[in-house]
Length: 270
Image (tube, rainbow, N blue to C red):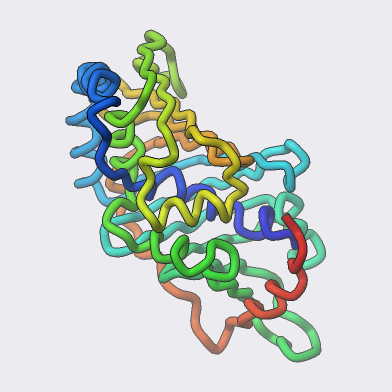
């Protein structure tokens, strides 16, 4: 598995956990313009944060996916640490040989990624049904730390807009059958905090800007968030908030930790 495919969900963290630092006086006018634009998003930001979880469908596209999106459908949770459980097509993860039904159950919980596979019939990992990769193996220590930071929910993606050097109200659009208002913004990457900056670099960040699109529905909740993160683009559709579900760490007896093997297999890969 290539790194970008094996941990496609890591890019989602960047969207959700991009913290911000203060702006300079030279940017005051742009910030004030952005503040006026996003005043209507304040309620959405707070309500989303309080919800604590959401049912989502997301896609991650990067050069390592060959331009084809990796699609994940499941539950995303925040508040007590970042967590997610989703179903992912095995082909998108280059794991077709590990599951018979063509689908991998993916979990991101407590700073690691887990992939449910058919039990190995022999070898070191005989009988194991989960493969584990530590987030630090992909994102680095600082990037992994952002997973459990204070800005690890959809509100971060909205709050970042106040630092935008350009914000546009695109207009009214339908998203999944719901009326929404579409906003587009460009955020300088020097507004990212230390951990999020490290994550940006880990995901191939080579630009001075993040481009963010957010759609807010008629109930004042975010319906869609799209962000370009370095060489990666992440699109997240929110179908409902407060979708309570405990996302547990798989049993240790059923888990094979392949972090070191993953590091070795991906040495030298971009």
